[in-house]
Length: 161
Image 1 (cartoon, one colour):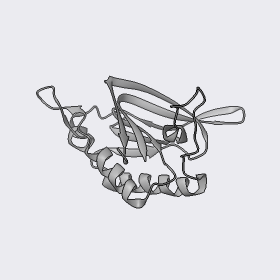
Image 2 (cartoon, one colour; image 1 turned 180 degrees about the vertical axis):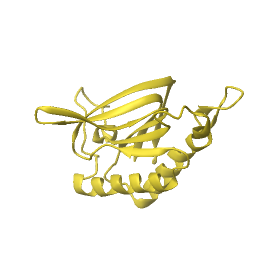
Image 3 (cartoon, helix red, strand yellow; image 1 turned 90 degrees about the vertical axis):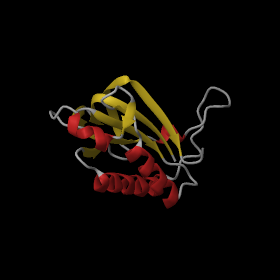
Image 4 (cartoon, one colour; image 1 turned 180 degrees about the horizontal axis):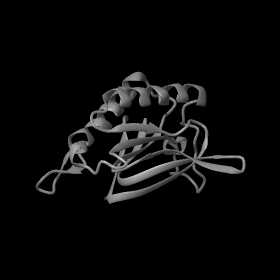
């Protein structure tokens, strides 16, 4: 399981359907997580990833060091529209591009299984949220993600690494 985690000032996700685009989710300061689920991923990989995302200390403490997780920093983040985590299903994160110029997505988990695992990740992250909200994209949908990366801070996570 792979994730790209970005610390953001704000983010929103629009769903693109036929001729319309509508806002589906938005957050204030917090995290945007692009989650890629791979064919061999297990519930243990999911548990590891959730723990890692929840505990990732990439928010600044009073001394300006990245020493706080989102739950620790949430109380001191601006309240409107409120701190949050936007988790986005993204099979391309599970892709490989080490050969040629065309990425290979054959390592991504089958969509039916990946969808269930993504839903479980969202449920687990919502259950653990303390002082912030967790919103998500829609598995299999065409989405536009708009964000302002803070820092910029971008971390790549891999349950196999």
